[in-house]
Length: 226
Image (cartoon, rainbow, N blue to C red; front, side, top):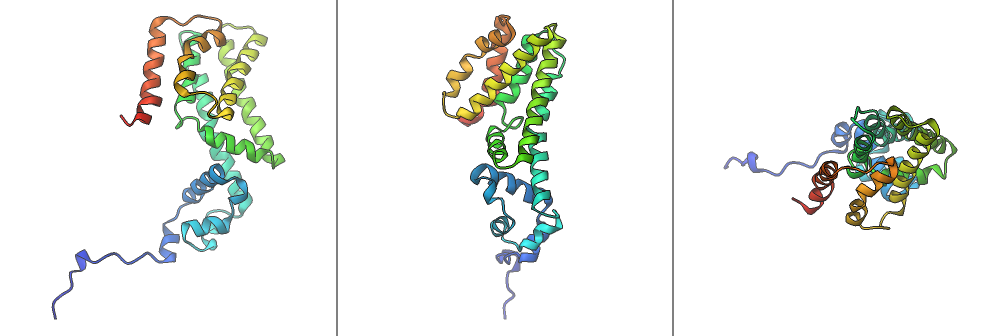
C-alpha cells in the first residue's frame, strides 16, 4: 500500500480547546472594542463574542473575572489609545506655540494616535452609564488641561490659555462627531488658518509646507494606497 503524502495533507481543523488555548486576553479585548465601535455596548456580551471567536464562553473567564472587568479594561485601553498621545504631544518641547499646536495636530491626522470611531463609541456608551460618563469627563479634562499647560509654557495668560485649549479641543471633537460634514481635503486645507485662529499668530511658509507634507505622508497617501 503506497505511503500517504502527509506533507500535503490539509491541516485538521483546530478543536475548540485548541482555539481557546490560543486566544489571549488582548484578543478578547480587541474584539470587545471592535464590537463597541461597530454595534454598540449592548452587543459586547460574552456569549456573542464567544460565538464570533468560535469558543466556549468559559474561555472568557481565563482572562476576565466578569463583564465588569472587561468593561474596565476597555476604558483603560481607550484612555491609553486616545488620551495618552494628546498629553504626550502637548508636553513635547517646541520652539514656538504654532509648532507646539502642530505637534498636537499629529493626533488628528493619524488614527494610530487617536481613533475617532472609538472615541465616539465610548461617548455613546457614556450616555448609558454614569461610571463611563465619569471616566469620559475625566479624560476630557486631562486632554484640555494638557493643552492649557502647553499655552501657559508659551507665555499665554491663564484664562486665555484655558479658552484657547478649549477651542482647539472642542473644535476637534466636534469635527469627529459630525463625521462626514466636510471632505477631509477641504478641512485640512484650512490648517494654516486654524493655526492662526488657535494661536493668534500667522504660521510661516516653511511651517505650512512641513504641515502639508506631514499631512500627505500620514493621512492622504495611505488612503490612496501609495
